[in-house]
Length: 210
Image 1 (cartoon, rainbow, N blue to C red):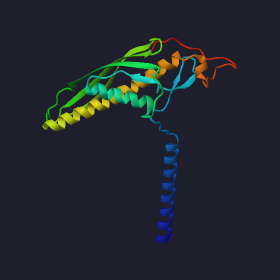
Image 2 (tube, helix red, strand yellow):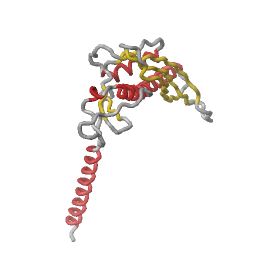
Image 3 (cartoon, helix red, strand yellow):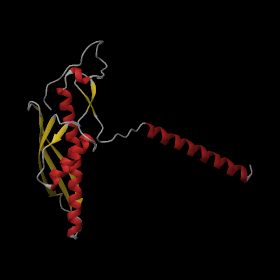
Image 4 (cartoon, one colour):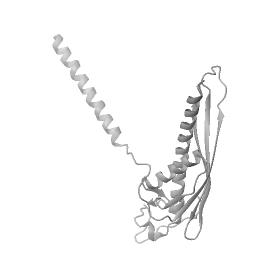
């Protein structure tokens, strides 16, 4: 076999391997779906029934601290996506507290690690009749490294607080969606789907505990 034939065979095998790798990447990407954080939340009851819950009619109580305002802003955006909202039907009362602690001790003290905690106590009520739909506590965590530069330390802590606030807001959003779904009457569930729902049947509603 000539050297040109060997090169041709090697090139052909490399091309086939490249094509297979490309097909594998396409197949992997085809299985991934990206959803905006503010899209209606799909929830499921204990009977396997599913429904999309619109959270845009929720208003959030005022915050008194920078971190509290960060949590509130994340919640409002998660509920509505920054779009115009209908008249509120629910109010989410929040109480935000934040703290930080050092994570262990290391020989190298030039960049010690710290953990920021953002804890939110919250309750969801209807505006029309002040019914309590749920009450709970959620916590968001984030870490950052300190240096010998004060401004950099302040900026790093703020960034960590913002990440923790975003994390806890996303968790609260999911819990609130479930609480509202449990409270919705069958007529409002509309297009609910479930594998075990009989023809002409209506989905059951479970208790209003979160």
